[in-house]
Amino acid sequence: PRRQLLAAGGAALAAGLAAPGGARAGLFGADPEVAYVDETTSIITDLRTIMELERDAPGREDSIKATKKEGVNWVAKYRRLPSFAGRPSYGNTYGAINAVAGHYNNFGFNAPISKKRTARILKELDDAERALSRGR
Image 1 (spheres, rainbow, N blue to C red):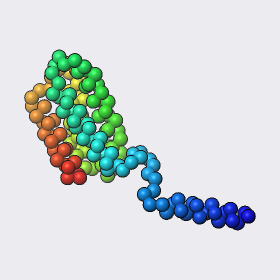
Image 2: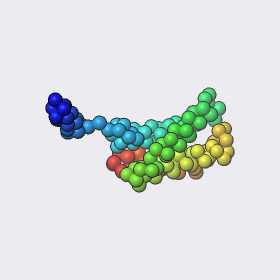
Image 3: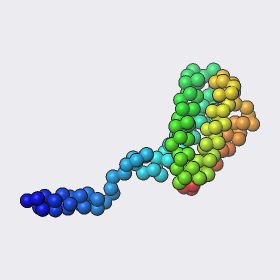
């Protein structure tokens, strides 16, 4: 009985380990590549949205705060992973997050972003989207 129990347990363990599409656990839960693309696309969209807000738009400050928090979480999640942190899409998105957050940290939520800085941030976001579409 004991040998049969051990043999049955070993067979069940082996079947579980050999099952196709094994479970994924860890930082992402799902496919890390899909999560990276989805989250990066989301942060790019949110950055564009807050940059287009009028100075007196209702909820402007809350939108900026939420996007800054999302940016901080995105950076914290992907900066430690060399498979993502070395990508051009990461570098461009990080630069845009840093520029937008730095502007609002230094000048407040009501100060508009200068045209020169806006142009540079939008170029970084365009470059990030292009790199992301190429899997880079």
